[in-house]
Image (cartoon, rainbow, N blue to C red):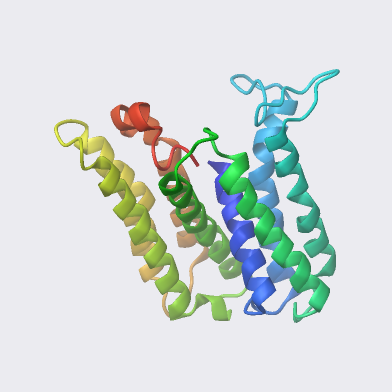
Length: 250
């Protein structure tokens, strides 16, 4: 779940920098870039330290003589454009090499979301799309938090950004209800709590962020979304155990 949010953050940040629509400022790019790196790096670090219940990372068990899997190699490759962007971001972020590295970062994050985090080689397009939407939604909340914590007057806090997050949230909630439609007899309290954590609480906080953005409230929105996605197997266990869960796959 942490890696999915991190890749979603990198995807949005890289796309915005590549298109030249990201707010100016070196720190405004470096902070979300670093936060995405922290979120993405939790899993390999836990596997490297051999923490309980984390025997490996993307099929790679760290140890003498072990070799990284193809998924692990893809995930490691995503760090290269991230480091490139970190070294190139400037005040206006419009340097052609910065935009090129940012495009590579976005493509790398997209590839990791499609392939590295997949659980099934024959995964359908619907589940891939669900993972991309879910990751972009969570990453958008973390990206907004980074910018709000630095400067609440950045252009990315405008109405179009709020509309984009709300649209992603509607897709997240809509896909859950579509997946959940076949089972209506049990577990509704857990599913409603899941939707409240992932969808309702963040949406209400996002809608309340005009004209000023509160870093504390946006942190609550991002954490609420992350917690809701993480506890989905417990709250919606019957569905997740049968179809893998739209959000559990992230």
